Length: 493
Image 1 (tube, rainbow, N blue to C red):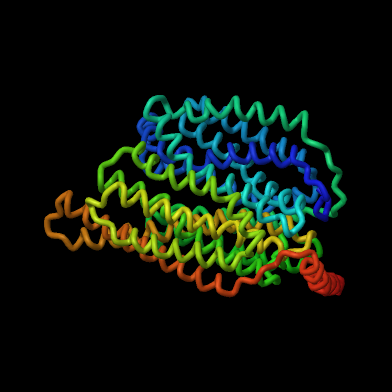
Image 2 (image 1 turned 90 degrees about the vertical axis):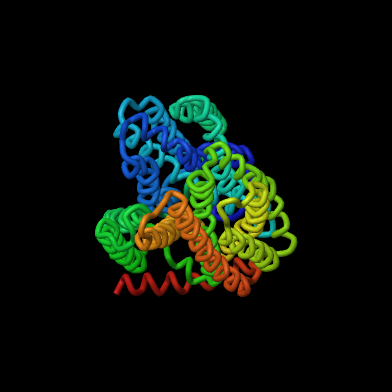
């Protein structure tokens, strides 16, 4: 893609990318409902089966920091076809896996392809449209990014109830083959004219850093934050990430340029999206725990509860993008976050006999609020970046979604389990009803902490300013140039 927005976006490229990304993102939550069936099928423990999700997350976290380099080195066509072939290969391996370790290998191959798609798609959307039209374009991106994972549990709940979990992979294979074939024949080959440099120490540091952080956080929900199996990889990961960031500032051509955070609106957008994700993705785990473990409902019931919210996110994402083009990010973000804060607080007051309709209503309003936040804030943040930093902003956004979601899930699940364990340990002769009540109170406390995250995001939203004209982008470019020159001078010295 060219550095500047095209006068006429290539809709062939965008539609094909959206189709591939939708299938890819759908797989992120496809297996959540199927984990008990996989555990029973292979005769493994609950902690072992979590590696179906953990391995996927780890590989994504390792690949994403390299995507800015890949987007500058290779064309969108080459990257998309490579990503889809990897994802197809991983899907085939997973679907026909005769043993658990083969399933894990398949999921890792899937993740290596999927991790390329989100930053690639975001970069294409930003590069293809002028700033005043990017809200609508990013609404389509948000539809894929949030609607596909949100509808995943519903679809998988229906499939797993009637068929084997293998069917979840089988049904994706023909769709992936069609998208790959269409992409091969229809995607244009656009030559790249950007300099791209690979730095092996950066790759090693990012692998250790982001891999350690994500592994530690993914283990925290089961083992607790104070466990050595959590603290050791987490501290090692933090050290690796720190060294990785420091090295990027010293490189003349960083693989992932953290200078994007010198632009205030991008930084504020990252704070808002990060805090919102911590509450959003944790809620996707806490609500199924409440419905299935406390109320005794089926996975299908859980999926049906989440379906209307997923549909709202799907339909409203393009609308919120259009509203952003008209009104800017501040009003929408404040309104959406206010709805999210109030509804998440209501979720911290659950009772064992809380009606299904009450949960459904709260979840739908919460989904509406979150949809009003993500697209406008993300678009405004990306608009503040000059074109040469757009690939880096896209990659860091993808990394932010991955890491903030992991932090939110790990932290809130740990809050829930720690409170539950303390309560149960203080009981003389705990009954099942007493344990369920303790778990419920732990879930409520976790939602209360999530409310705090969203309130912090609401405060950050008060400082939003609209960035949406070519003049402002030009000023941002001018502002960024001295930074680059100073870096080159430092490196030369």
